[in-house]
Amino acid sequence: MPVTVKTFSNVGEAAAALSSDRGARYFGGGTLVMRALNEGDLSISSIVRAQDQALLRIDASGPRVTIGAGVTFARILAERDFAFLHAPARSIGGPAVRNMGTVGGNLFAPNPYGDFAVALLALDAVVSVQGGFGARDIPIEEFLQSRERQAGALVLSVSCQKPLAAEAFHYRKVARIKPKGGSVITLAAHLPVSSGRVLGARIALGSMAQTQVRAKAAERALEGRPLDASSITAAASAAVEGTSPADNALASGWYRREIVGVHLRRLLSGQK
Amino acid sequence: MAKTALQFRHNGRDVAIFVDGGTNLLVALRELIGDMTPKFGCGQGGCGACSVLIDGELHLSCLTLAESVAGRSVQTLDGIKDGPNLHPLQRAFADNFAAQCGYCTPGMLMAAKALLDRNPQPSREEVVEAISGNICRCTGYEPIINAVLAAASGRARA
Image (cartoon, rainbow over all chains, first blue to last red; front, side, top):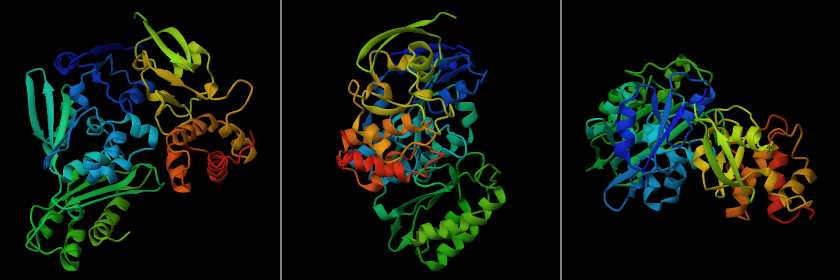
């Protein structure tokens, strides 16, 4: 069914159009919204586009990086300063999807997708959104938990601290098909080490709940301890706590619960 | 609902059509322009059968809003041969038995072309990665990978 296409030159006008129409959906790279249109989603009556360069902005010069919501995964892979994000970007789709899919859109991708958001959750990212009443920053965990209510807001960018050391950030997507496939589970961990102990552990999981979630019990098992076999075993045992994985065509919820600890242990131990 | 006028370059030729709001590029190419080389597979971005090049970059036409290609250049399989002569990739696919039912072949060829345009001498792993968004249910992929490598090495018949 035809829909109204509204194209704006700046994000303010686009955000106003988005927040004033319940049937409006923001159109970024197209990998989510065009798919919904192709499937005949009647809840979409209009699509809103913004051709604003602000959405394509990248700032990777300092310790804190900012990525415009319209930046594609192909562009992330082309930026040397984003080396810590290359593994999550490369794990998404094939080359065409990476040329189209955007960082902002991935925040809304349902299971078994949304792998980049798992990495951002482990990095304690902040999501900048613009709604009808102005712009605000939302911690990504809060954003993801209220994702259904964010459809009327326009995501402008995400920002996060670069890991102080490359080895402090770990990422793995478990898929049945390599190099491309939907996620059975996705894991990301940011484990900064100070004086030989983990301080500020963040572990995020994809496909283990309705949205990406933090494995807080596993984080507690590592916090303040050296990253060794003992703490890794404790974290692996706790990984399933607080999760509620669903069944889908790729795996059952039971299977996901069974393997999440195994893969967390392998990830933190540096095993393949 | 009013249609929108859309102009873009299609295989080196300027075209102008009217599209309904929300029309995807695959429908515009097949039903409004008559270029049947990009195929409808899944409509979800999962199979790659509809792959085209937009300004030289590989995209899925089923997930591309037709209006977003206004003023841009779209290349499909129909535009890669040189007159009556097959493109070296097409010749390599034929020589290496890289097509069986042929439904994935247009998308595979465009994905392969996108690779060779920016990396004329890819490794086997790079070929595998380049076609990772394209599903083939017949060949088991090996003949396709061999065909792309043959085209890259100039082993395809001219």
